[in-house]
Image 1 (spheres, rainbow, N blue to C red):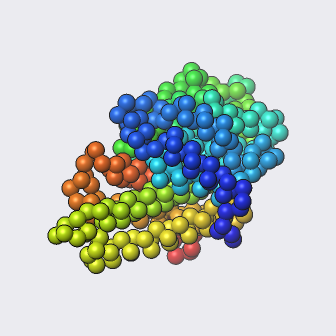
Image 2 (cartoon, rainbow, N blue to C red; image 1 turned 120 degrees about the vertical axis):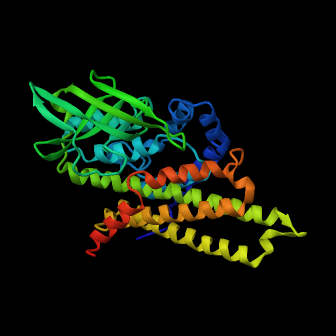
Image 3 (cartoon, one colour; image 1 turned 30 degrees about the vertical axis):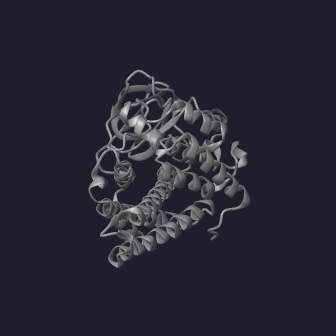
Length: 372
């Protein structure tokens, strides 16, 4: 298991750093929130990311990708966390890409794989059906209807669902998991934006007697297993983004402690505060190791992927809650003002903590996987 980036992955990280720092600083996320941007991101910025090849960075060359692996893609998510860059990368390039890569039908591969490289035909996965993440036992159903299918159900918190051209909908067919690709503009599909604390793009999707052609059902060897792998890849990328948030907030807090003077000395000279940030620094380094191990597990197709995904998500959730709370306290009164950027990091971290499984969900899953 290698933790170091290859030369190509390092070049990808450096180019992403320059692009995000220049084109998508924290101020841009604040502007998107203040303007109530309907997509939650800048479409022009997304198109630039597409031209840089980010949507296909992790895909193998056989699928038209850049073969940078998830270690390379994870580096981009970490930088997105540091700058709060809002881009539909998780939905399109991780969740959808992982599922479409597992297509067994050659005709479906030829039809849907090119969409991954296109920026104007985004895909989003619709799976959760309540406020809690529960990827098993969904109630959305698909029934044979004429030469095709009829889809009925409701999905909540569809990541980047607003403006998506295609929806990948998880449904039950005769008690088994299946996956359908649905035109978001089809009759019977209703997409409603949801207001989130971090102002990112989430949607509620209703499916009322949606008529689909026969080939709308994706040919997967095992849809339930394919879904679980795609979700684990996305959970790890979210943990990478949370790691970026934690490291950025820690560095900003340390800088503040060095410049804030009280009793004629920087408050960072107080040993009690030094010990607090030293403990946080150690926790950030531990999270870094967990995320890198999990990213390597994806690229190596390790059997420990589910275990490492839940471990990374739990540590990211726990650390972000503790570190952001500590950062607010250490910044004193300004830590709770809207004008100060710290609040934007806190809101994004809180939403990440609930997305694709909260701490309790993944702690329980980790225990079950370990046989406790």
